[in-house]
Image (cartoon, rainbow, N blue to C red; front, top):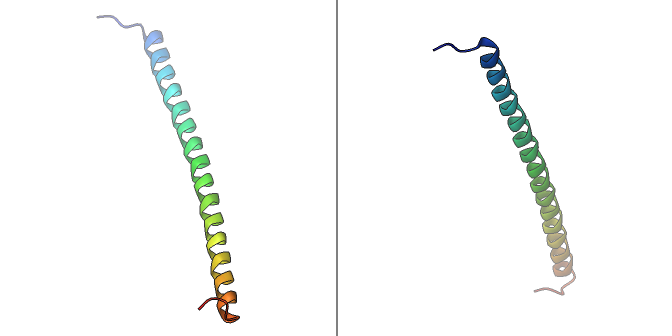
Length: 65
């Protein structure tokens, strides 16, 4: 079996390049997803703190018992 070295190196290069591009695309996609999750979490924390401070203020004034 005689394999052309040029064809072998081209195949290895193409497979490696494709793998690298897929890895980069996957990483970027997950970073974007993590950023969105983080923003949602920060907003939920802000909303929760706002609700807590509102309920504390109302209970201080005797509105909520």
